[in-house]
Length: 361
Image (cartoon, rainbow, N blue to C red):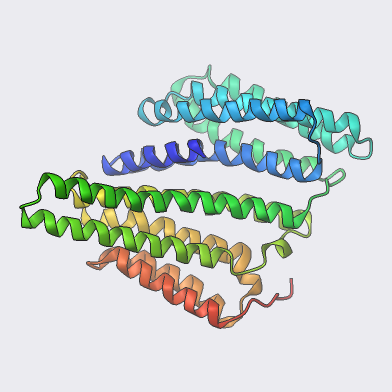
């Protein structure tokens, strides 16, 4: 999760410097590379349970690609230099091609599907490399096209003969990823306390810094409450019942990009709030508030749409989107993070009161 941490940190710096559009767009691209490589490996691993020496070596190569990708995130944010980012991504994806070719050799029944995956991934990687030679103005157009091409590979490959997957295994992996990205926000709250202790040592006699100490500790507590509430909301429904058909699985898997990216962006927003409290941010108070309210609201809406909406009754399916709407308005209030935390706690109270019941598909 080093790459997720680096992407979140870079987003934080871009937001604090008022480079909002650039920060959000590059973050979306960088996070796609992290998420897509992880997602492809996760679904492959549950379909082909291999654990020999070659499988482990190829997996280690993919891990090495992630580390290099993390190193390429900063140049992409700062200079729009995607070379290291793309080459690291290609390394991870070529390793995935090797895995699919091995699956094609060992499983005759799924040979058409596995070869389709291998060819589709290989072709898109060649196109990513070609993109690096395009003029700078063409790259913003090429990137979305190539992302769509990547997303199309499973849709096309699975139409021949769908691979098997274990719903409990898949959803457990997704749950673990969610815990990790929410953990980034808990780390941000820890940074608030560290910052508070640092400033209190340097300015122990200043009343203004005593107030700052209280504000930072308060922000840390609210971040923990918010993270815990998001965790509670995410794990309220039984996720394994959401990926029965191919269409359901694609919906569940693809929309989780939004869930994961929003959760990681939440930690960047907390860091921006710390900057604002310590006078190191150029953003307005309302803009600072939106660095938290937008990712939190997006997280709530996305996980409600793909998970809670099926298992919630009318009260739950009213509370979640309404709560997200209120969270989006919270930056207009003096205590925006506190308001967001209160809304999320109220949502959790409703979820504790109502049990998940599967609706008709």
